[in-house]
Length: 470
Image (cartoon, rainbow, N blue to C red; front, side, top):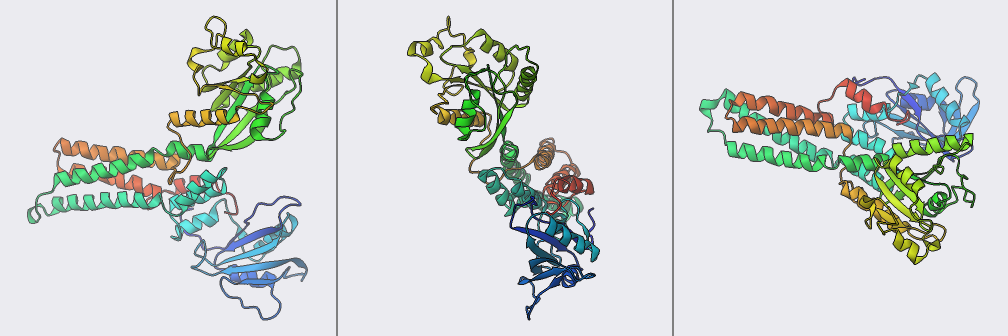
């Protein structure tokens, strides 16, 4: 997959949903793109077939002459295209049928169906983008929040690649200086070991600063999964509805109304959050409700954060304590809901060691939140608590320039460890040949991030996660 392919590829480049979407795009890239476009597209009048000019016309089956669609054609000739190859885009009517028929005609005219991520792979192989930018393309397409999109766009603009290249250049310059002393020691002045050490320290500090963003990157890409759990009828569904400002969950006074997990997607402080409203946890002989309880417990175990909700007007009961014991190993926030129905005395009793029995480790302002979901009240306090908890874990998704992924973090770690070995080699006064071994390892690891040094297996792993049309 790492050889630059010479054939012409085609794919649907837009999301296709039945009866939705006004425009669907079929993209063709390769040396035969313009020839295929001329076979299929008929532009009336004297329109010019120039690069980066939009043509209006009809797409026709060249064998039957049947008109397939009324469309626009955009030609982007090499090297002024995303792939740095000739590219033709057919802008058809949306839906399914038109774009699929046009794609079929393109393949009949000589193109083949593109593999997942192959357009972006060609852009990388042809030097249009580096590997960090290619990964940013996928992140931008899959962004679940404005902050995630902004971080991906920063990567696409080179805000990660530029410092990595600077680190690698510094290491290569240092290596060249050391190797020159190995080969021509008698003709050159002595090596400035202090300056070499300072250069390595500077690169390591820069690497460490970027490494620290891996948590932010993962949070931006995958978000938080938050499960609301508790007894039946404590207001879990009302909390979800108040938080999402919708009626996603059915709310009644009857316990056990929620029988399955209800999901809602939110964005809090730039962090995508998947909120799961679960069935009330209690012992039951009802088969369907029992299944719901089992799913609730499974959701709690799979969640990044559990909102253990109880009825403030009823106090902390033995049943609440039982649920707490089941999820005590998870990251927890207690939600004292129905605050509006509780008396001042009942609220005070929650903090009474003899009456409240609340878990002491959660009796803090950011781990015990009072809400009145039916009002609604307390949602801003809940969001602040979640963000504070995230920052306590050194994860903050807002206002970041760079957010690395796990692959990039692993390569940075290898580079930093290799440079640390160089420092140890210097301290141990070992021969210069030993310095060069670990410097080369650091250079290779940094090159893997941007793609200067990359294997076919890495490319396969990265681009297999892309959609077909990208």
